[in-house]
Length: 415
Image (cartoon, rainbow, N blue to C red):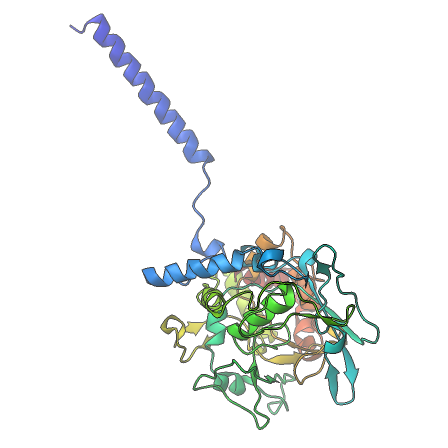
């Protein structure tokens, strides 16, 4: 026979177990599910060693660093940190667009450096004048920041691969004449064995909306300088402010960011993972991919590319799916804002990688802001804005029935 005291204790224990079980079951329903790797743009390349992951995190700290007056910000600038424009590693928002300008001259474009060009630093520290647009510019553009995913892989694509995709004279008659943007290399640029140099000593640009940067070091150095006014060992002079007729100057010893920190930032960008396609076996996704190729989108948005040699072995000799040829294409008068970089025309734009497109809204406040300036608020709108060489594909899309359009967009959102 069980005593009353023991029976009461057993009853209490049973009630406690029942209550814990109910609470646990309710928590299972309310706790968010773990984020899957293909549901986020953030994170390092899989397979990094412990020391490599540590270096990735150290670089992330520089990416997230908020610069202030005491650490060299400005005194004229656009934003105070890299992460401000590239929230959650994704595309930027209209509120963080960059403004660039230049002037058309015989035989090319003047970046108007004597007037503070080519980028407008529209913010400044207290007591110092921010830049305003000067007189005389003929080209003006606004850039939404691109996603930072998979950049190391794109850096590792050999020049011979890009030249094989190039067809500036459209010899195959398909209406597509992509070509590289040849860029003068800065003094600190170190060519890899596969880099190709033209007769002027220029190299193939591949980063930025106009392919104006050669590698992630050049991209990072220029962004630090032009966006935040941060000097480095590679770019050691302050921004020029035409309103005061001299370099801006901020009373912070140069360089404001040492080369070790810059290289750490570059490593972080190089080892950032590439987006992972979702729902790859979904019937609508598969049908959408067929339509993508059928109307010729793949002629510029190349789905599969092989990387070559790279000092970071994790990037070398990999098959990637960025949906870009990294070349410049005539996008028609509708996207011509008169602004150019390098040696090509203002109506030419680098093919934007499509990987990660479906996750763009995560970093853009739940809405799409596509194309170079964010003017397209849906994938449908972005496709229809394609002109020039891509007009045939855009027209092909417009001619599809509503169901096929939906399948194509479902495919693009899976990337």
